[in-house]
Length: 101
Image 1: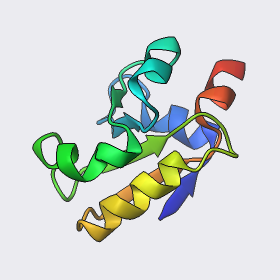
Image 2 (image 1 turned 180 degrees about the vertical axis):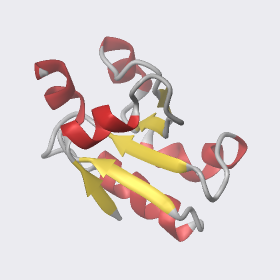
Image 3 (image 1 turned 120 degrees about the vertical axis):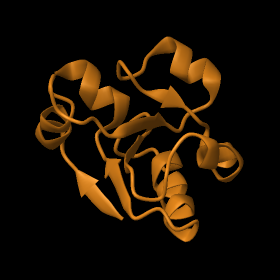
Image 4 (image 1 turned 45 degrees about the horizontal axis):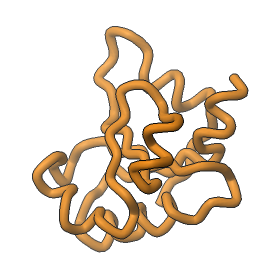
């Protein structure tokens, strides 16, 4: 799985560009506290059951979680790749880095 930094992510979601599907992989309660605008919430342990109805195998998908030390987005990204999704990225900094910007 590819990883991206904050500046790459902000470049991907600039107005006028085709945006990736942003997936917050934390539990819903954490998503309600803070998330990247425009992202959807699919907890890592539910990704296999819920993603197929929301994304196609060729969509750009960016998964993220709480911080660089959080492992939820890594697990979700691995699951997506096992399911055949081709363009999966992991925003390593997570919501922690996003809020600092």
